[in-house]
Length: 258
Ligand code: SAM
Image (cartoon, rainbow, N blue to C red; front, side):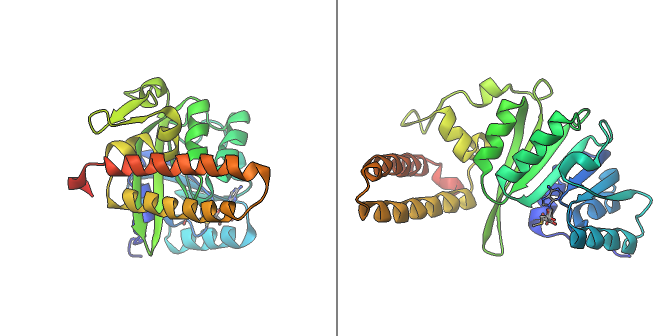
């Protein structure tokens, strides 16, 4: 069988998997990522985890059709429950919300399933900041962030390793910093929201994402303006501050990269 051609999103995720990994792809659906990881030789072996019956069957079919049933185990279960501690050294979770990914990791960590895991490569569809907060609070350091647009949707990919195995500490990564010669000060909160690596190396997709966020916040602002609730005024001030901060950041991104 010919090698699988991945979407740009999954291809970029695959590139975060270290060579020679034993990969666990959780929420694998058709098992496209583990199949491509093993076919390309990037992963030595893989586990495809799925909680739902339909995607689990699809993963079984995908692996069997690729002739990789010996190298890829397809397992049905919730999150990291499908793993034995120490079994995988790289975990990918893609195509879910950031809060669901964080909940899967949290439950898994409590069950000891992150033992021996050297790399997490995560692609939340929304709620990237929730995932950054989870990583920060649980001793994982972001080593890379990517942002891309495909089929009209914007995706972020976050790669993290255990603190101590990264060149930077979380304290260094999230220490406040100035952008554009000191004109804008990014505090930890802004870095968690926008992404410390993405802010350091912004691209046009990053700028488009945050222009979109400004539009969403402006819509919220207009509906708050129509509200007579006492809390609306306080909320309005918060939203206005958020818009101002994002605008300031966008204004001082290096124009040659956008
Ligand atoms: N990872 C693939 C991708 O990015 O293209 C598939 C993403 S699909 C939108 C999300 C998949 O996650 C679904 O197949 C769903 O059944 C699975 N899923 C959701 N919650 C899960 C959980 N707690 N444990 C395992 N799989 C889960």
